[in-house]
Amino acid sequence: MSRLSDPERQDLIDSYDEELEMELDDDLISEFLMEEGQTPSVGNSASTLDGAVDRRTYFRELFRLQGELVKLQDWVVHKGLKLVVIFEGRDAAGKGGAIKRIAQRLNPRVCRVAALPAPNAREKTQWYFQRYASHLPAAGEIVFFDRSWYNRAGVERVMGFCTDEELEEFYRSVPEFEKMLVRSGILLVKYWFSISDEEQNARFNMRIRDPLKQWKLSPMDLESRVRWEAYTKAKEAMLERTHIAEAPWWVVEGNDKKRARLNCMAHLLTQIDYAEVPHPEVVLPSRIHNPDYLRVPTPKEMFVPNRY
Image (cartoon, rainbow, N blue to C red; front, side, top):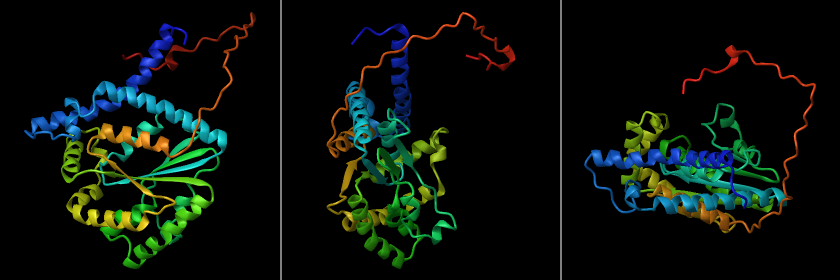
């Protein structure tokens, strides 16, 4: 590889800084817990600063795995594959953070995130899977579901948003629905992010204290703390009744966010038999210079003020 120029080096540093900025708020959890006099336990996200995952190791592996995910993306496009990855788990389990790191270096025209809101009045009258089906990928696409049709087995069941009959029909239908997806050529991977009661409590407290994260706390999230045991029972039933050979569940231990992200990324890469797609060498063409061209000056009042 040729030596980087100063602008190229700065661009690379800026790219890495984007990830560093996202990581800074994780460290605030440790500071918050120490201020409250709590002792971080081994494996807890609060122990990250003390070496649960060495920072140098984390970033080295993160960037390596993201590079492999780019190769996977190229393979999906090259072979016209259709990949769906489902991320489920309790509130604050780390699903969103994992999705961010997985999709961070990927092409948004190839990879997209589906995070559906609560169904509207019309959608409530549709076939349950209908609004999810419209987000499924075409050939050469990847879709990450940040929560999915499994809402029925989780929040809808626990909060009483569906009847017992609707829940039972879901359990009868979902294995057949997913088998149809797989038979149609869709690659379906399902992850459950698992965290402890204590870890969720710590993350919720951090969101309450952090003004940049308070938007993540909804009344439904707060109610989920009250109904921890009900969610546990719902999760156990869901995993038992929807863990099928065609689309098995994979449980990600999520108490340590960094470990969870790396483990999930590494595992996802093993689920598709991909290879590096050869690309032709890119040569930057010379710009055409027209001696008659005169650049029109931009009025100063159109520029954003330089405040920094």
